[in-house]
Image (cartoon, rainbow over all chains, first blue to last red):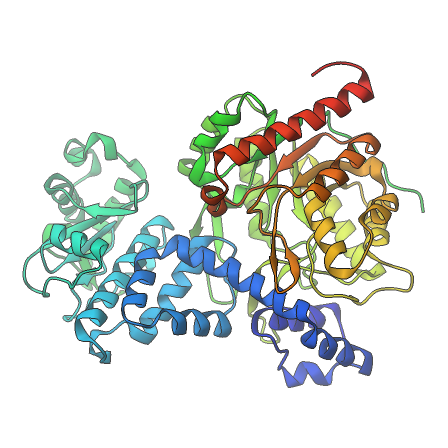
Length: 268
Length: 310
């Protein structure tokens, strides 16, 4: 067996507890098969796996705390943890990468409020997952790949350019998210979260001047002309420059500007 | 084969890891430390990546600048987790790009990485990671590969490059006849210009878990190549001692450090490691008392070695 094959199998053992690739197993000689069989039974294999899973979960905790609270409320936390760690490998030792992968996993399993269960709690969970995905996207500058249509049953719609639209009062939504209380009904109001690099906590309700500035940039107004609207303690030229480039994108037919600087649409 | 020569950095002293969530801590121990160890990968933002590759990242000045401000005038040394220097299919090139950027931003003294591999591609070429270094077989093949890569890193970064012994919980790794961890570290030094970062907690944990003698291992590695030492505390789990960077340094590790301070002539730094997310439970009082103990041991040893006070 080559060193590469040995490493691939050890990664599987350290993550899942078994080295189940039959093709790879066929490439082993008797002593190599014996080593993996012995290693799999040694308590150190379980400790290795526990350490791997503990490290990964600490990164999830650091990057998706609200989603974990919502999962606990729904009684889904233990199952989410077990299935996520058993069925995935870590994308990176960076917490944000682990968090994005975890949130994508949760979204694929429970991200739609129509999935059943306790509807208010599921709605709560779906909303929080959307918000934390937007926070991580803004933090990791991958938002340009996240342009997609929102669903009508979401209270929070993923946006781009560091804003997330709330189809309810944003301040009330934020209070209830943090208190883990039932959400305002979708459509009960309008608002926007500012999700921007450099924001303490990653997000907060967007101010009218920020919404105004982002709206103008989204409509094609040069950054230099809206800089005065941007709060001095939040000046982030790189964000504004990115938004300016979004402005060009928004003017394409497949993407449209919404109210309050919220940009939505489908990839060109 | 004779040992390759290695540049020995000037001694700096003692320090701690920069914890990005607790940068204020550096100010609370600035009067006791001589240096700060920074992990550049913790100061990056990711870029979009394909499913077949590891996430790409770039150094972010918004993250770097607060760390440098907290370091003040203290020298910086660099420590990485992501290079995966032992992955047979190829190391993490993005990690090297981050280090290139870090070197252009910070005049750090040296860089270190764990001996091991953190990821490997499956048979479809999809990279699968575990997020911490897994052990490597103690063989000539692996020593040749890692040593060659260590020299490449040192040349590329233009700085001294150190390799760190990693924790492991599995016994009887595949090995060439007569090879063990001490022989493997020795052979790495013979084959490359790299220095060693000896993590004394990892050494202590491996020996405790696998029934080995840490002093015997220290006796059999080239101590003149030990440039840096890590001390840390861990935790017990399923009867194993686990490297968690979460607690005070155990007495056994302090004993190993005292021994090493007497015997490693080119030791330039000792760093107390605490995980960012474990610091609140440890607390500033314990953290500072561990740093002060480290200060005392270092000063005592340096006074004895060179006859001058700090």
